[in-house]
Image 1 (tube, helix red, strand yellow):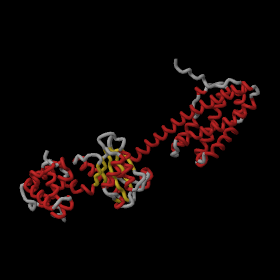
Image 2 (cartoon, one colour):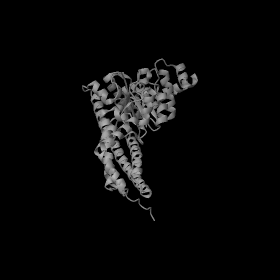
Image 3 (tube, one colour):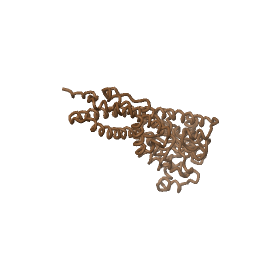
Image 4 (tube, helix red, strand yellow):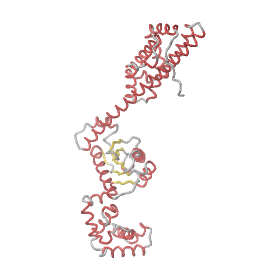
Length: 416
């Protein structure tokens, strides 16, 4: 046997209905008193003239509806939200007020009404049994009315906030598109739309994943926090990517990649992050974003495993050398020969040779960088020369470029 449905919330006691009729004649006074009660407890209700006017209108329309329904025995199930109440919810959403701020008006309005109504009902109903019934019926009715209205205004508040967020997102996306395209942009208007300054330092970044995109915002916020910015500008960049900009105090405010990687790993271990370089103004906004896109390209070509952080400054040379990936692959094969193999032994030999031929390199520097004995480095360099088929002194600049490409891009340019 299922639960017994509750009877409709309506008021049957004639004295309560008559009291509702008498109160309706003083509606303006009751609404004003309710408004003053609310504004004494909710400062934002009177701080904005438009909100204040709608609050008073909502007090009047809701009170009128309650009294009319009680007077005529209309059940609470027939409740419909007054127009003023819905508009009040929309304006509250537009003032960045949370839904709880909107619903607080109804909780306090309920308290105001019931305190005065119950006292007046005690004076109006002499018979104890009829008084108990009247109190029970009106308590149930008013509760159901407030519950129904709260649900409707709450839903309208959320819907309006979502509408505003969608409109703001469209405006932000359009402003960003215009800035990135190099169009003439009213800087002041763009700053208002984006909610951030555009004249100072700009740092762009991209977060992406091959899995669930939900954690990307956490990765973006972690990057922003590591840079020291609480509010990044974030925009989707396709279904599995999120673009962002922060305004660091200076280029030196950007932490090194290992710290950024630790922050991203803790926030979203399946995410990749690519960063441009800090640059100023609208031109910096554009150039940093282009650099972040180039850094992402390198990370994707290199098949880096998540989590990863790629700064453009660290891969800029490889990016320039690999604008044509097929040509870069052929170049690496021609310069490295058998050293371009993808096995671990060849990788160890390449690492040793790369440190030796690097600017300001050499055996001692390579040993320090790799944490190996000098003789071990020498053995690996000789093995690298054997695999290459020629000495390291032959075409040293080209050799260094090929080793750099192999180190940064890995499988994209090495032999299968």
